[in-house]
Structure formats: structure tokens, C-alpha cells
Image (cartoon, rainbow, N blue to C red; front, side, top):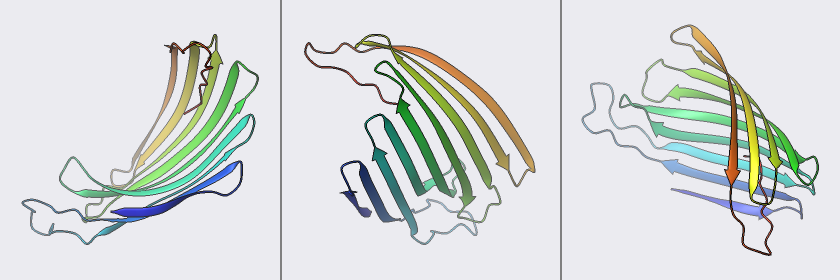
Amino acid sequence: MSAGINRRLSQTTQLRALLGVEQTEIDNPSPGREDLDPAVVTEISLVRQLETTRLLAQYRQRVAASGRGGLRRRDEVNLRLSRDLNEKISAGIGFRAYSVDSLDGDANEQSYVQLRGQFVWRISPSISMMTDYRYSIIDREALGESANSNQFTIWFSYQPTPRGQQQTITLR
């Protein structure tokens, strides 16, 4: 259960704030893993949309079940900036970091950081090409291990638009 506000602070700025409580029951709990107290979940987002620039700053805290029957709390920060360089080309950068903690006593914490760059070329109103580069680092504290990765993706998109309407593609 959650409640919040979604408020336009100005012509270009929007604030979204959610606060909630999540209760999870565990079927057939093992010793020491009884039902847990309700957990607080939150989301705070600030979006600023200018004529050619879009900025997102976001904090989220979520609780979810793990694949091993336990519960995990995830604290996440997202920052994104995108800009239309001209009518056909957009570029963007992003940063995402989160940490995952166990709520039921397991010592399986991990931290994750991702840097991202995106480029969109609107070849025509219906056809676009998007490229995406991501550099990620994950640190598993309980194992004393970390890893990093590089990912490059390119894809083409075809989305027919009805006559008289112009399609806009935004960076995700």
C-alpha cells in the first residue's frame, strides 16, 4: 500500500513522491525466518524538461522476495540527462547505483554501479537507430568478489505514424 503526490512545480519541473508500507508473509518459514515486520517503500523523482534537455533525479527504496525465499531491500539512485542535439539526433548519459541488503539476516549484500551513454538518430519520422553503451560494476561483499562488464547495443526501430502526426523518440 502506498500513497503520494505528483505535482508540477513549474512549467518545466515535476515532482513525484510516494511513501508506502509493504508486508510480506513467508510460507513454511525455516527456523529464525518468521514473518517480518512491515517494510517502508519510497520513491522520490524530480524531472526537469526544457526545450531540448531532460533531467531525471530519482531515489527509490523497494522490498522484494529473493529467489531463495528471503526478502531483500533495494536502495537505488538514478540520474539521467538527455539532450536533443538537433531535430534528428539526441544524446544522453546516465548513472545508476543501488545496494541490496537482506531483511532476514542473510549476509548476502551487494552493490551495483552503472554508467550509461545513449545516442538516437531519427532517420525518418518512422525509422530510428539507437545505440547504448553501459559500463557496470557489481560488488558482492559476503563473497569478497567484484566484477565489471561492458555492453554495447545497437538497434533499429520502425514505428509507423498516422498521417499528420509527428513521432518523438525519447531516451530511456
